[in-house]
Structure formats: structure tokens, C-alpha cells
Length: 136
Image (cartoon, rainbow, N blue to C red):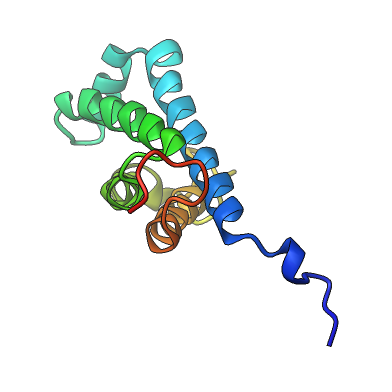
């Protein structure tokens, strides 16, 4: 039976590459937001305002930068993706969870970080895909 997605259009390695690079770019963008817009000190102050130690802001920025670069390059993708999941879950628990589900709510709801966490889990399950430095 012919299908729209025939064998020529099924390319899991390309799909994994697209997901991996997209996740990596998004992490770099969020690190950049914290560095260039909110500033590291401002991010640390925000972390303090929600009851977290300010130094965690610097660790978060580093994790987003290093994780984003590793995902884009395809370095230890499964491990990096799983290591970034707690970061997303932390944003739900400490920052966005009380704002409701939809991300357009005041302060941003938890739908976007939840989707991001699931996408990271999917990346860990499917692996690095094409053009990755590490093939684990």
C-alpha cells in the first residue's frame, strides 16, 4: 500500500540531526538571553528571588552553553540530552509551574519547558543521528 511517507522520505538519522541541532541552538539562545539581556548578575538575582542560590544561575548558563554546543556538534548526545532534562524540569518547578500551562500566561506557563524536556528525552532515545562527532 503506497503511503505519503514512502521509504525515500524516511530518514531517522536526518530527523535526529535536525532535532539535535534545533535543541542545541535553542540552548545557546537561552544562554545568550541570560548573558546579553538579563546579564549573569541579573539572572543570579532572579534565581535568588525565586528561592534558589544565585550561583545556580551561573551553572545554568554554563550548562545551556556547553550543552548547546555539545548537541550541535553531536558530542555524547544521549548523555548531554539526559543531563539537560533536570534543567527543564527545574524551570517548571521553580519558575513556570505556578503560572499555569500555557506559555503565553503572565510569567510563562510550563508547556514550553515540558515540551523541551520531552524533546530531550526523545533525543536521548533516538541518538545523535547524522553528522555527529560521537556515534553512541
